[in-house]
Length: 71
Image 1: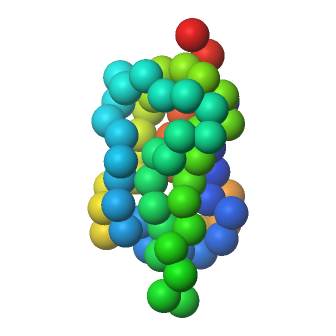
Image 2 (image 1 turned 135 degrees about the vertical axis):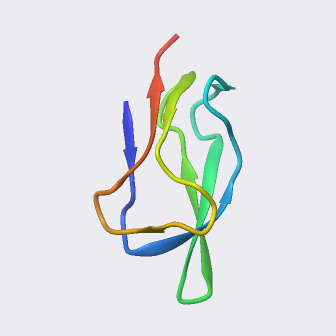
């Protein structure tokens, strides 16, 4: 499952690495926009097979943040 940005924002924190096992609703990263912190959550249980952002990156709406493959 592809996890995409819902708005233009800066990647403030990346909380997982590729290969990490995550649960549904677990935070993968934290975006910052207009001084607000926006958590990016996994939508399913699985493994992070691709992490497409790094801390300090800027993302636009629809940009890929991570791919989580179901276990």
